[in-house]
Length: 262
Image (cartoon, rainbow, N blue to C red; front, side, top):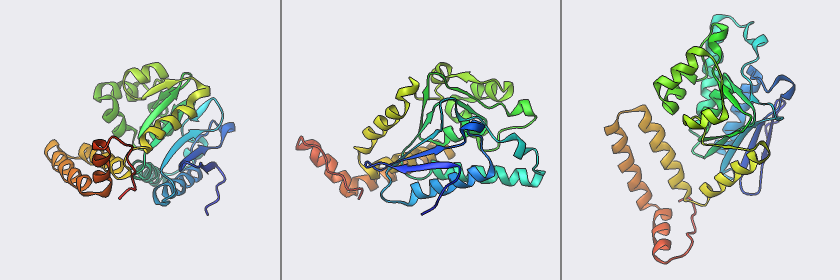
């Protein structure tokens, strides 16, 4: 079992892993050590059959992740900066492609790498006090963990560029209005709301959930025709699966389905 110094990792009885960046005195800022631990945590989420979903959040009430640790960042040479970016991209992509639904519970500031982390989750729920942004240009930098790629995919080119070029954060209400977060809830209800959403998802067919995420993820990377072909192929896989047969049979028999993930 991997032990962590900078994050907390716990799995509840329903199979939901709670991953908490635990540096509240630094507003949960990302360092290379934190990124490495997140990578190990997301590997476990992806590979452990007992884990069905994940929630990612930050310790305390003021910050989800307030960005990178600037002190560490300024000490890196250009080659090291590039490697740090590639490491971060790989870790976030691991969460994104784990095949299991995840929620970013944005409990406060989600800036720079924090917003990039949140965008790698399946959905984002924000506390009413949350503020989200990509302020890298204010430091003479650009996002390095995928912000320039995921943000326009979520909110569109124009809105993404407005955030990326101004570096100004937006509040939770505006983030919801433009589609950056899926819901805004009171701070005290944030984790409960995340668990409630995942509870609904986990009642569905596990194979169908995984393949639906794969269809969206792969389809966004290619053209419409390629995406349609993939959807048809995965639709066929679901239809031939035990879960697909169980789900349709249960519907006709007017009973709850008993999915097995096969």
